[in-house]
Image (cartoon, rainbow, N blue to C red; front, side, top):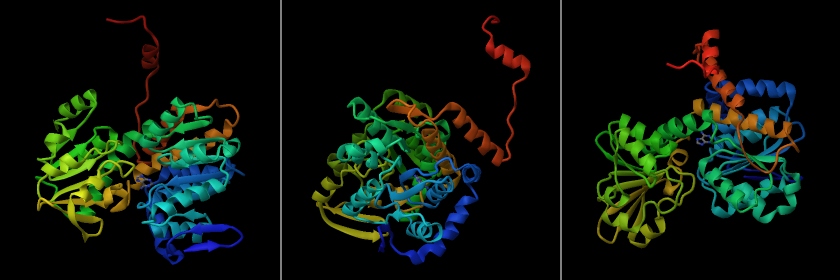
Length: 425
Ligand code: ADE
């Protein structure tokens, strides 16, 4: 439902879903103590007062807490989806109805609507952009150079977005500070690994209800997300095969106890394939040709480019929805291949994305990155910036405190030892 008052305030599926959304947002909040502390401080200090902010994120219960914290900080923010299939419509409704936050996101929106929402976000003339995949930032750079003077800086959530920002930097078009949230330790060690690991299997199980024990599961890519998927799949009793292009990561996978081989070989062995490489056509025509009858393929990388669905369609005689988020492609050869979640992020399409406990740290980084940009307005050269180490450490400390876990502290003797070079053997 679209509201058009003095200017369009939201574009969501159904505001009457707000009650359910609120209940689920409250539930997620129980596992987000670090962001709650930040929100409480933001409410007192208003570090983002008067800042026009666009957040392009998966619209989930966890993102709701980020949006609420940013509003508490004084930001004039709007929220759009970072993926056409990841929006939780009840959450979008609650943010609009209960919190007065403009949201432009509908689960299953077509590409045209998705892109229109990106334009709506840019019409807000943001001072700060929180991006997840860099679609808003790339559109700004491509089409709205005249708005760059409004911009204080941007923050980026995910590996794919960081790769795009690096490409912008190399092309000389990154003319503003961009905070690299993904590479903070308290983000990728937990969100990318444990978050993607658990939520990917959650999405696969919700979509298919298959038993993972005893299955041959092929994980394409052994970055942090791939490591998480492989680890958790093994934990569920699967025989995990990893494919990689990077020799160091391949050795890591071998020494972590996985079989490593090219996709060409793995394609004939796998029962279930998970792509998490960030690259395109990792599973393509020649791989479909040798897959077992009934093999399942899904993706947990940011964009829906990792599985070459066009080539699969071309060799299919029929495509049938056999369960929610589960499509059976009948091939001319008589075999079938099952595609989960239309090749989009399976963890957000068929499940609810990463659990709140990890998003707590990811979004603590996002909130503090926005504050950092505003505090340092005009002082940062264009380019990519890491989250300051003391911020990363503080997030970890707050998380441990909330978990009731205490650290050891160095004795004065140990501090002196770590600071000296003179004493050896
Ligand atoms: N990315 C992955 N999981 C997510 C979640 N639960 N909320 C927002 N972004 C996410």
